[in-house]
Amino acid sequence: MEEIRTNYQSQGIDLEGPGNLQVLADPDRALQILLNLIDNAAKYSPEGSPIRVTWKREGTNAIVRVRDGGIGVSEEGQEYLFTRFGRVPGSRIRAGHVGTGLGLYLARSFARAMHGEVELDSTGPRAARFG
Image (cartoon, rainbow, N blue to C red; front, top):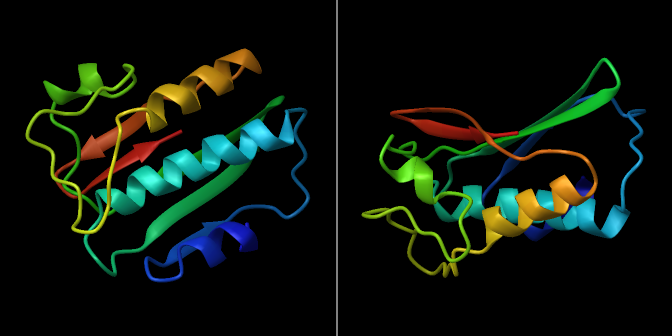
């Protein structure tokens, strides 16, 4: 997690979860999923708005959630989130950031290959949370 925080120093990332949580996963793909989710959150959050990453154990599953500080995702836009090259119509990426529309698609694909899932956990007028 410290490596991730280092890559996003200007954004600010709040990390919260047990230090001893272990998962059975491909470490490279798991890191890529997390980086894609955090990168997406950074693109759609205002400058200086912290990203919150939490993790915990629920039964036999590890639950990781990434919450941004953006405006949320409209109901109409949610159908585009996990599609290849999908971009939410009218969404605005913060200046200086570029997106291809592949991050969430790849994150979900990698998670499913490891018998996991990535989905929009909640959205509102001030944030979106993926888990």
